[in-house]
Length: 343
Length: 264
Image: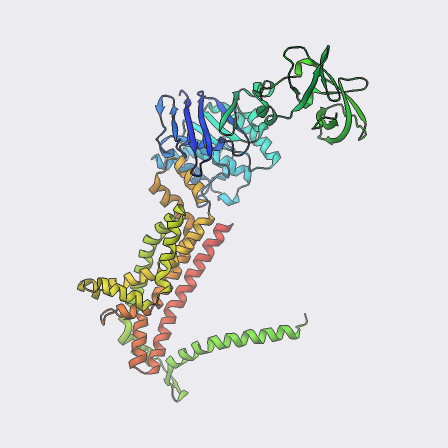
C-alpha cells in the first residue's frame, strides 16, 4: 500500500466573527510522514487539522489527498481516522462496539469485524477489555481505544487532536513512546496537533510551527531547535536567552554584565543562546551576574542570573553545585552556540 | 440518640402537611367503595360501583390509553428531531421557536381547542375521529418532551461524538440514530413519562374537542360527576389511579436506572 500525500494549497479560513484562523496556508505532508502542528492556542493549528479532516471547509484554497481534490468532500467520505482531544468515545457502546463502529458502516461481516477488532485490541494492548464499558476505563485506556477505533477501518490518513493532553504527566510520557512506535510501524500519513513542544519533538518527523494563522517554520525538530526561523519559533520551542548588544568591541560584543565572543559583520542588535549552553565558571567568564533564583529539576538545576538586563538569564547547570542566593556567578559561552534571529 | 423538640415539631408538621394532601385522595377512594356515601362507611363496602363504572365507561379507559400511547409516539417522532435541530441551531430563531412551542401550555386549553375547531372543524371525518383529540394532545405535550431532551443534548458532548461518528464514515441519518438517539435515552424517557401522564389526565382541550363517540377518561369523569352518583365518580377516580400509578412507578424506575447507568 502506498501512502497518501496531503497537500494544502493556499488555504484560508475565517470565522463568522471575522477572525482569520488560517491564512494562505501552503503545505505538503509526505506519504507516511508524521507531521506535528505546534503553536500557542489560537494560532490556527486545530483549524488546519479540521480542514484536513473535512470538519471545516476552507474559504479559499484546495486540499488534495495524493492527486484527488477533497476540498468539497465531507469528513465521512474522506477516509480519515481521527483521535479527538477528549477521545469522544461512544458512551452507549462497549469497547468492542466502539472499535467496530466504522467497520459496520463499511459493511463488513460480523466475522470480519470480530477478527479486526481482536487485531486492534491486541495492537493497543487491551486484549481482554472488549466487553468493558467506556466509563470503566482509565484515561490511558480510553486514549488507546480511541486510537484503535480510528485505525480499525484502515484509514488513509490518521489525524490526532492533542492526543495526550488529557493525561497526567507520567502516563503522557509512556503513551508518547507507544504512539511513536505505533506510528512508525504503521507508516500511515499522520498529522497531530499539540501545544507541547516536547511531544512535537518526540513524535514529529517534521514540525510545523504556526503563529497567528501562518506558517512560522516547517522543518525537522532538530532544525527548529538549532536554527529557529524567527524569535517566535525560538522562544516557543525551548527557552531562550536574549543579549541586547550595547556596542561592538575589539573581540566581540559588549552586553550588560560582560562581553560575548563574536565575529562577524554587521553587528547584530541582539544575540541569543539556549539555557544549556551557558556554563557556570569558578573563575572568570564572559558575563557575570547575581544569582536571583534556582530551581532543582532532578538531573539539572535551572538558575536565574541577573546581569542587569531586562530579563534574568536562564542557565541549565548539571554540575550539582549549590550556590548561595545572591552570589556572584560567572558564565562562559562558546561562540558557535550564539545565534541571531530575524524578528 | 436523643430526639430534640425541634425534630419532633418538624416531624409533626411534615405529617400534618402530608395528611392535608393525602386525606382528600383517600376520602375519594373510600367513597368509591362505600355502599352509601351519605350514610358513611357504616353502610358497608362494595365493588358494585367499580363494576358499574367499568360497564358504562370502559371505552373511555381504552381510548385514553390509546391516545396516550399514540401521543407519546407522535411526540417522540416530532420532538426528538425538533430538539436536536433546536440545539444544533442555537440562534435567535431557535430560541423564539422554543418559546412559541410552550404557548399551548401557557394558553388556556379551551382557547387552543377553539383555534383547532375554527381551523379544522369543517373536515367532518377528521373532526369526529379520535385523531382530532390526538392533535390537541400532541400540541399540548410537545414541549414536555422537547425540553428534557434538549437539556440532555446540551449536557452531552454530542457535537464531538457526532464528529467522531462522521470520521468513521457515518452520514447524517446514521449519526442521528446511532449516536444522538442512544445518548439521549434518559431525556427521551423522562419526556415520554411526562407526555403519557399529561395525555392521560388532559381535560381542558379534550373536553372541547371530544364528541360523544370520542370520550376520554377525564371527560367521562366530568360526565359522571355531573350526571351520576358521587360514588360512581369516586369509583371512576379509583380506576384512573389504578391505571396511572403503576405506570408512573414503572417509568420512574426505568428512567432512574437509565440515568444511573449514564452517570457512572
